[in-house]
Amino acid sequence: MHAGLPDFRLGSVLATSFTGTLSERHGDAVERIPTPQRLVDWLAVYGLAVDSCSTAQLDLARELREAIHAAATAAAIENALPAPAVHVINDRSAQGRATAILTLEGERQWHLSSASCLEDALSVIAADAISIISGERDGKLALCASPTCQAAFFDTSRSRTRKWCDMNTCGNREKKARFNANQRKNPRSAE
Image (cartoon, rainbow, N blue to C red; front, side):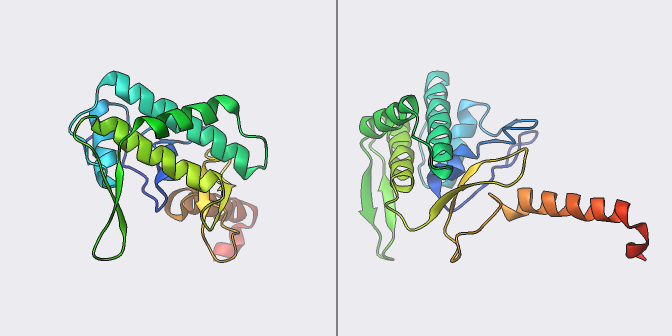
């Protein structure tokens, strides 16, 4: 990745991974797409390669990210979906001209038009958000148990009881904090 910029937190669900481009929302927030080029880089990682991104398009992408986060959070806690967030998601979904392509391996891949690639990419992300928030896909929206994160994530585990958006970051950090707290309470248990 680029020197001095935070690594991307990659997940298997496009829409919730996109909301993860702003992490630690309830702590020291980390913006993982601070520049238009970083958004281009993130999209490429997810197979949505675009040629360029303007500052205005980055603003549209961040607006979509926050709308997905608001709607997914509401769905996870079984609240009514916020109308402004739903409007943004629907608007971005309708603006793109991406086409789903079936690969020879039996997987879906997205083909972006050459006319407005960034809008196409945002459309794909919005469509993915619609599929998980509407309940079309097998899984459950949940919120990360980390008090500084609380990111919405899509739990596809068999039991649907996952606690962390990412075990390698939030889960490990929380387990380490719990271990250190126990060590301070019981210093002899380490011997």
